[in-house]
Image: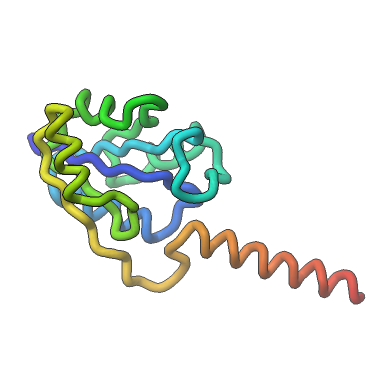
Length: 148
C-alpha cells in the first residue's frame, strides 16, 4: 500500500486546495493530510479559520482518507508515525525540496518528495485573494450604503 502525505494550512478552502489533494491522492492508495496548527503558522498571516474547523473540513473531502493536525513541537512527528512513501508539496508551499529531503533523511524518513503543479482553473485559488476580494466587495457595499 502506497501512502501519500499532503500538508497545508487549508485556511478558507478553495479549488486550488481540492486540486492539490486530488493530484496527491492519484499518487498512491491512501492520502494522509496534515493540517498546520494555528500556533505554527509563521510564514504567512495567522489562519482565519480555527484549526479544529480546518481539520473537520479537510476530513470531509472526498480525496482524503485520513486527516490530522500537525504537532506543535516537531513537524516530523506525524510523518514518522504515518511512514509515507511520498510527501507532496503544493506549488506555492515555502519548503525547499532539497533541504526537506535532507531533513527527512535525518529523521529516519525515506519518502519521495513531489511538488504538485499549480491549479490552472478559473475562480478563486488563493485564500489570501479570497479574503482580499471579500474586503474589497464589503467595503464597497459599506461605502454605497453610507451614501444612500
